[in-house]
Amino acid sequence: MDANAERTLVIVKPDGVQRGLVGEILGRFERRGLKIVALKMMSVSREHAEAHYAVHKGKFFYEDLVSYISSSPVVACVVEGPHAISVVRAMVGSTRPYEAAAGTIRGDLALAGLRNLIHASDAPETAQAEIALWFQPGEVVDLPREIDRWVYE
Image (cartoon, rainbow, N blue to C red):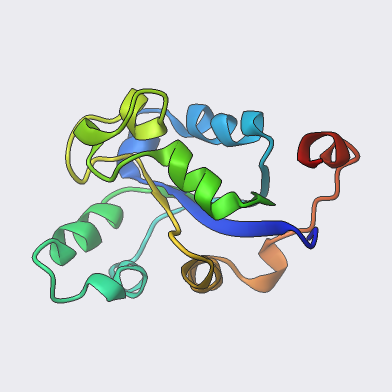
């Protein structure tokens, strides 16, 4: 991984998978110049969902988060690039889709509450922990590209 790059976890949630938006969503990151360095579709066990949302345990919305993400397959990926965490968060938009700006993933494609299509890590520490929870070390690859010097300079 380039010294200036960051990695972040992105999950296309059940509504994004069910609506056939995986390619549209991941394509936005690639068109922006970010790299997908790990990718898999999976069913999420309740235990895995509880571990992922542990920070929210005890909050009124915790059970809904756990139930929803484990209700249908998701697509999890690791996205890499300069300032990847903040770039991805800006591209994703506000948590509440009805507040998300046009041009963001949620602003363009989502409409209501928990059905907000996508999860993205919010900080370097969170990204590191979430990537480790969702991917084994050998599943995340280094992807050097000649074009990076043109995209990232």
